[in-house]
Amino acid sequence: MSVRLKKMSALIKEELSLIFLHKIHDPSLGFLTITDVKLTPDLKIAKVYISIYDRDKRDAIMTKVNDINSFIRSQLALKLKNLRQIPELSFYVDDTLDYVEKMENIFKEIHKNDNKGTE
Image (cartoon, rainbow, N blue to C red; front, side, top):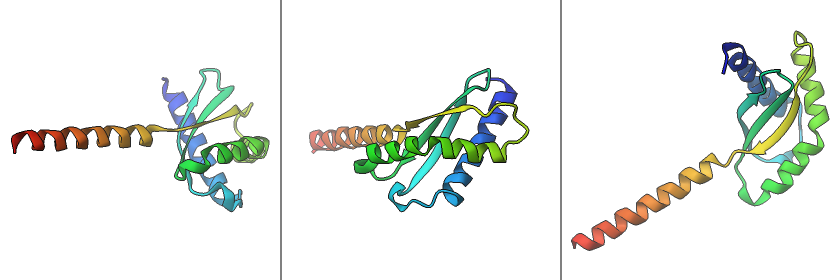
């Protein structure tokens, strides 16, 4: 990834975080975090990864985020006036923390089984 893409991704991530924090006043979205933004080389599409704390409401929250996609994009356009074209936003659930938790549970289970064998 080029330096320009990295800088633009970081800038878009920061601005999106601020938009969710200050512009979107929907308590039903709960606690969410923008974890990553990946831009295509032509800067036309941005894949936005969101970590959602409440696992049970992920689908509903993602539906709401996709419903307000055009509002989010328009707010981003107001912040990034130096860009000729604001990228299309595609939102995805970042399930990295789920994977980490699953691996930790596996390691705990292995460690527990190892301790039973040495007793």
